[in-house]
Image (cartoon, rainbow, N blue to C red):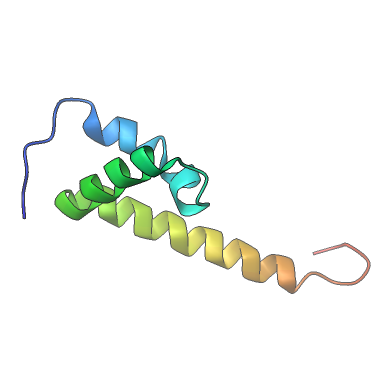
Length: 70
């Protein structure tokens, strides 16, 4: 479903993606981002890419040596 997105909507949503993925947004903000991602393939792709990077960083963190060195 494609919906009209006001100018600046993508920039606003993209600036909240980190907090969205970390579940740090309030319910209204989270709903707004979720709706935007459902309607905007470009932002959904950016969110997916960010989620993959964060996941990879978490995996690297788990593989860290006991001495604290990567």
